[in-house]
Image 1 (spheres, rainbow over the protein chains, first blue to last red):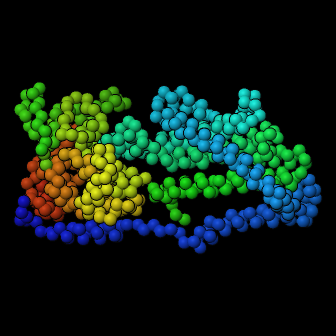
Image 2: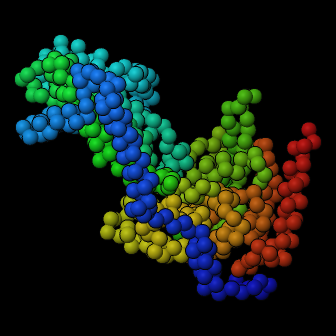
Image 3: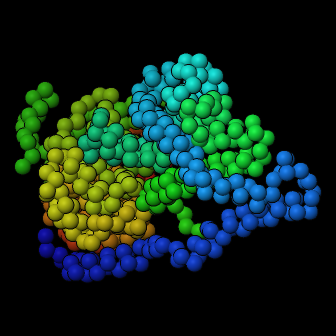
Length: 296
Length: 262
């Protein structure tokens, strides 16, 4: 195949051309500098919180709300938190609730994941329980507390049951929508590579569905935490140990508004902290590794 | 190299081929009843042969490729291939949760290559498509041309005797596409693969193929075939390539015009 009427090219020519094209078209994605992160991501929420505290303090200082049983001063709430810390009870409240919440969430994960996969992949199962599963998401989980108390009594099992009923639909639905959004091209590509049946599910469908699944986990945690607080408030019982929900209920019974505020702030803080420390980094990692996270 | 398949029923004596498409028809259920997409297509691809399927929209060329890939079944006729063919799409279809190297390794793994060999083999394949050092790169970090080359390496990892390509360079810019034509020609000649390449680009078809098959549209039928004797290396701007392209384009335009007449 000697070339007669064509220009001869040495192979190095093509390699050089290609290297040039690659260099020209490659996008370099670097990490954001620390300073930019501070000013763009950290500063705004700090300012917002400071503003809320300032307004709160102003309401009390200028006696716009002149009734500590309705609105305690920020300092008073802080004193209650400090007191609980000094008495060594603060971490106990938090741990009682967080350990329940995380353990319940873990069980919800074990049940919701196979359930979601089954609904996503088996037509009959989807037709049978798919609508019920997504309908359950709109049922407030506090509605499960009375039946759970009747079935299981006032104990930890009851709490876990309520968490499961709240979180399992979220986790399963997240996985279902993740699977539904897998581009058909990936499935075709997988099939031509020989990934069919279980291997197709393991190597193609599950990793492709991961972003939707993680979004479901995030929502599942929010539901777990809310369900648990509802259960703790309604079903407070001294033998169960004092969690954040019981703390709130105790504050109400004692008409101690500072304690009520303490409990609300702790519930909020723990919910946000778990999301910021566990689920948001997980979600960012999944999206960034796929180039799905737009910078800025 | 290729297995010998005797098709006694068709009265054809034993022939070696990488793919045999024999009297294949395909219809889909449409709004106006059954719609015939492919009508009695017969194409043999010899071992090591490079065939392009050329046609306008609606000629069913992608449908035909799906049939050969085994992703769909023909309504009539038979398709035999020598092993499972590899398939490259217009979109790179690389998995974004894996690095370039791991994409190739997944193909190796699914083919049953031992774990200890996969890494080396993947590096070799990346070197073949001149992407040495791209092993750990994520798909979104690669340019369009690089992605298609990784996709090519992944397809080659299947070690199929037949590579099916469904307009793999259509979404690339002209310069990159031209370079990838050279790459594909080089790799085809080095590996002695059989290639069945679908395109609507006449110049591309002539530049790459040993044989160009023109399909008519609605339904897809074989309109004409050309053997391309232009020696390699070819350039897109070669006179010989241009002359044959003009001839084929005329024929293609004639096929398209027929659809406007009724």
